[in-house]
Length: 75
Image 1: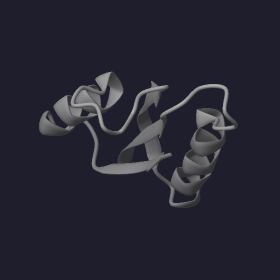
Image 2: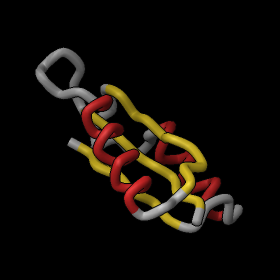
Image 3: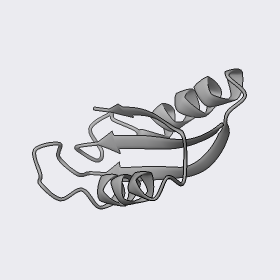
Image 4: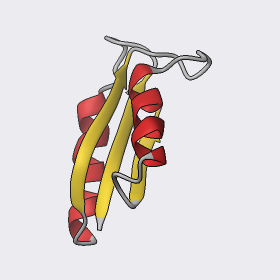
């Protein structure tokens, strides 16, 4: 199975680190035998914004059926 990974933190430099999310998400995918298609990362982008570049790209790729699953965290 091909999976997309999505990580986001809304602020930079306030103790939030997207790399910690990605580490856990990679581990989650690996434990299930999933191949990671791509990692989509919005760093310093608020969840309240209408446009989130990485999430928008993830949704575009999902419509094209480029992967079968999504795993993500956003803080």
